[in-house]
Every structure is written in C-alpha cells, then in structure tokens.
Image: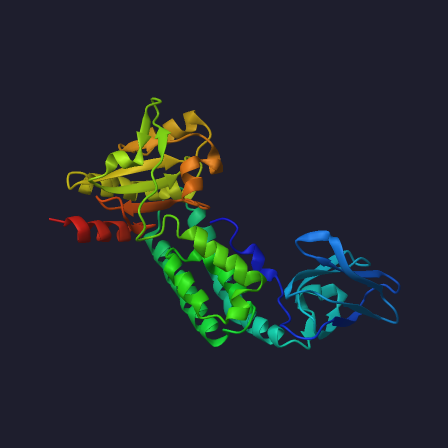
Length: 360
C-alpha cells in the first residue's frame, strides 16, 4: 500500500470568507526576532507572507484565492506546521516544543478538521499496525490478521460515509476523500460520496483532485470493458489480453519483490487448480525489472498460468493503462470482456468463483 497515510498530518483550518487572512501568533519559546513565513506547501519557494517574532508574538497578513495547503515556517527553531488556509482572521497559540499541537481558532473549518483527527487518526493508526504485522509475516499468511485488516478497513469506510454526509459544505470532506481514495476498491463508492458535496466544495482545490481521480479510476472499473494490451511471456512471445476472450480471466498484477503478492500466491494457486477446468484461467502481469527474479518467483511459487511482463517496474505499460498504483491488484473479467470484480483475495476469490462457476 503506497502513499496512503503521510497526508494525515496536514492541518486544514479555514473556510471561505473575507478578502484577507490575518494570522496572529503567540507561541512560547520562539527566539525574539526570528523569522516567520508562510509558504505554499506544494511550492516552498512561493512565500505569501513573512514577519518576525516581537515580544513573543508575530503577525502575518495577505490573501489567498481559495482554501489551500500552506506551511508556517518557524526559522528560529527550524520547525514547520501545515495549515489549510483561507481568508480569515486566525489565532495561533502553543509552545515551540510542541508545534504539532498548536491551538488554532477563528475558522469553522478547523473545528471540522479537529473532528476528522479525533475520528480517523486512531482508525488509520490501527490499520497501519495491522498492515505492518501482515508485512512482517514473510510467506506465512495469518488469515485472522487479514480478516482484522478487512474489518478495520470497513470501519474506516463507514466512518467516511458518516463524516461526508454530515459535512457536505466543508473543504475537509474532499480532503478526507483524497486521504481514503485508495482504500476503496469500488470507485462508485467514492463517486457517490463526492456527489453528496456542495457544488462550491466540488470545485475547490481538493474537490477537483477527487473529481479527476474518479474520472481516471473509471478506467478499468467494475462494469467497464477491459482494455486490451500485449506483453511478452518469459519466452518472448507476445500475449494479448483479448486472446482470453470466452473465458473467465483473472488478471493478476504482482511482482517477485512484493511480499503481499507472494503471500497471496498460494491462495491464487489453489483457486487456479480448483477452477481451471471450469472455463477459468489467470494472466499474471509482473511489475518486475529483473527477469531472473521474475522467473525464479514463478518457479518457486508454482505459478502455472500464463505470465507476461515488459520488465519496466512501476512503468509497466499494462499497469499504467489500468492506473495500478499498488500491488497486489487483480481484475476478474467475464467471457465477454467485461470487468465484473476487482481485488478478490483469500476466501473472497474462491467465493466469487464458486458463485460464477459452481463448486461441485
């Protein structure tokens, strides 16, 4: 799971309002005369305002075109704090030794974000703990841990539904959708949540990010026709996805270096041998860059189905086409070429194939 939890420490603080922001600070422990600046978090060279500490306090003034992510830089202590700033009067209080615990008041959005932290930080911390435990298991799968992970992801999903429903007019809601986007396998869920938001919020900074993500994620979504591609098998023979038309096909994105992929492989082997005589097969697409490592993993894990790769790592052309950003991932395609399920693992894969093909 890549690039999911780092964004959780951003601090959205303000909503739409007046034509100028005014940040008044009283942070204990800042050196007298030290520089304070406000910069664009995405472009640190873009300074919006600057000041110096006088009598223990500071003041920053300016304007922003819309609520967005900005960075308060405390040069005297070489620390930074992230704020989600709009044109409001804000008060910043706290201690230089605990910059992440600054008390920021004056913005309705900050109250909503405080609720976001209280609800979601513990949920994400537990999900991270479970993920780390799973990744530390090596090749031994603890199914109870996997079940706990799925249950925790379900708790997060339910909390997102509740939060967005209650905060349709807050910029924190699309921010939350950005944070949780990769935890939802069905893009229609994210699209439904996005549809609840006020139009003004949809057209804001985070709203546009979510809208673009939804548009891209619909490529390869459940219900869509599978996009064709061709890559070489270990012998150099080109294999096309369309060549499997007429069968139920599981397209498995994996790599020899991916521990969760290797942990899932025994389950996939079991499913393959269980259903291969019922009009079902698997096409493995490896994100490896070393052919030797790829071939060794195929042999070691006894992957008897068709395997292809262009050995381009994360730039694998099929993975790029399907917007694959983390592995393992898979797509279940029906005989007509339509995607009917995604990311089936463990018992879920067997259950779905039993539903489609029967288990007798």
